[in-house]
Image (cartoon, rainbow, N blue to C red):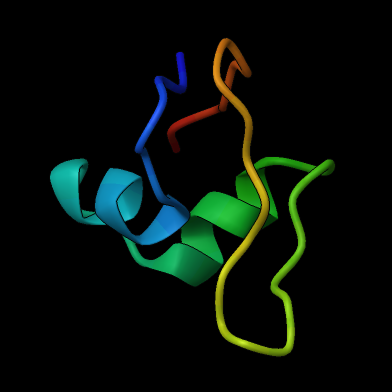
Length: 48
């Protein structure tokens, strides 16, 4: 579950996966032009 202050990159790193793998596993995520992906507290993510 996403908590305040989390980033997609930090979540991916913590689970030893790439940002692309995290985004591919979660249909509601997409990479933004600045290289991030918007996530929100209490959002549930699939960790492949």
